[in-house]
Image 1: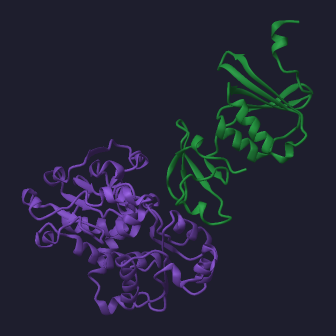
Image 2: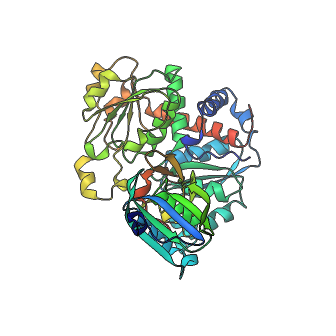
Length: 156
Length: 306
């Protein structure tokens, strides 16, 4: 068996592959997948620290389910912008997209400002606008404070 | 589409100019004629947080235009104190009135109200975030004194961290291409960094100092603010800085002739009473301009042209 074959996670017949995950981010994406009720009992394979020409080292996830819900994809785009989501059918890649954080994020992140109305009015959905995609900065539509995406906790 | 006034972020320089022009025209209309303009309209004045000038001038503005006012001046007098949600209060009030004016201690409350109500909503101050009607009257005061905004040298003094009037005004001034500010504050009350990173399309310089005396020869306008006890999570921190700055008439002897001192009021001890008698004191006229500007705001909300 060649070295390459030893390294790889086994191929899946159909499902989703999340690829080009910067090494270390895979664990955070796995946490998101674990929170998605639609993925309960779905086989997921997780590999860490593969060699990558592009990233140096990368993580990879293979999910034996045909679709991921939009909300889960958006959460993934927040913790690791730029990862590739591939759809697999009969062992072949039929679609490949690079996920980026959406311009407007509705009820995906919790505002950090304790004085924000979203922390004080039950049922009010949070809204953030991506104000600086390069630095991953978002602004709360309500309190108008700016935060780094990574300092905000996700709304499950 | 209803005309809300929630944040200076939402307004272009042209939008702001419309308010300034309307205010100037309001001053030319007789009280008798003004009284016809909003006859039959009702303004809901919802003040969940204490206010003297903003509430009274809004209510007086509505009465001057022939309208009527309902509302409350403190949260304790409402069903919110019985546990009613904010959104239920708004839905109730909107069936009794034609415009809603809100002051609330939580940031973003007016934005939330504007999203759930079919009535126009005016933000009269939301926590430490925005106070757009104060900003419009500040700009009107500046225009009346200097006939321009671009190119003026403005020093903000005091609580630059929590002061919503500073946050709103700073953003508005940048829309008028003011590109240099002096910021005078103790370390613990410096202007938050995110407010310095506004996209302007031109470079903006912030000169930061802890010495009020630096501002006097520098500025056309000194914008004083109160150190706000109620915004401090830790009262010990308040005690450390409460008397950080006190402007007095003696310090103003070195001031350039055109220097004007503005303050959103109330003041505590940051401006000594002897400044009131100097030609630099502009804060009481500024408060008076609030009545004019709030009439202009109400007219714009109801799309009444004069």
